[in-house]
Amino acid sequence: MKRKKKVLIIASIIIFLLVGASLVYLSTGNYDSQNLAQSHMISDENVTIKSERSLEFIPSNPNKVGVILYQGAKVDIAAYSVEAKRLAEQGYTVFIPKMPFNMAFFGINKAEKIIKENTDISSWYMAGHSLGGSMAAKFTYNYQDNIDGLILLASYSVDNLSEFQGKVISIIGTKDMGIDKAKLDETSVNLPPDTEFYIIEGGNHAQFGDYGVQKGDFAADITLEEQLDLITEKMLEFLNNTN
Image (cartoon, rainbow, N blue to C red):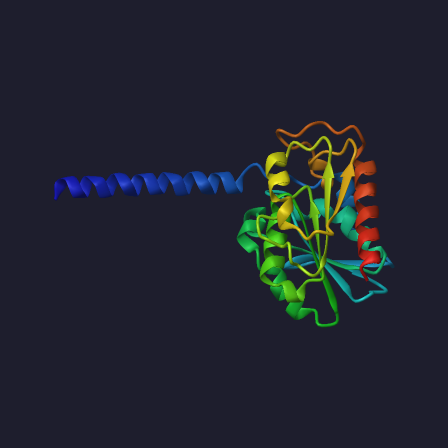
């Protein structure tokens, strides 16, 4: 009995330490949005920005198409406000849900409630950066009948979407060290045959948003503004051509 009690105590201590370490990891090392992103967080005559359960970029002249974007791991959702506001200026309503610990892994189905509550929107696209892209792909896999397209930003799908009837685009930077290139190649078969792959020469991982330098990433050969311009232009082209 004494030995059993000792084993239980040791196991409890290990579990306690693991939980503690996990909480420390999840609550520290977040990437805050920077100046360019913050400058796009201001409502104007073309776009109204709301911040409740999600960041919402609501166009003054909506086209009934919604985009739900999941952020990269530990990245402040406001870091993607540059793309979001520019899409909204062209009529697309954009939602960036607030995730527990800034991790889309803990809120994969956040998009479901957004879709149910916004009945005025008739067409939905999922989008996501890095981990957020994989989670957006997982949501798309689980709710294929509700989703018209998927935008992967420096990301990939671990779920088999090869028979997905919607449109898919994958945008990658050549200087991106924040994504597992082997995994990217390996999972390409999970995407539909007509998936569009767009390569940004000189683009890195962190410049898919505006949250500063990311550990382990290469320095980009192009500026933040240039990369965000290319990303946004391609997203708009993709959305315009599929609607």
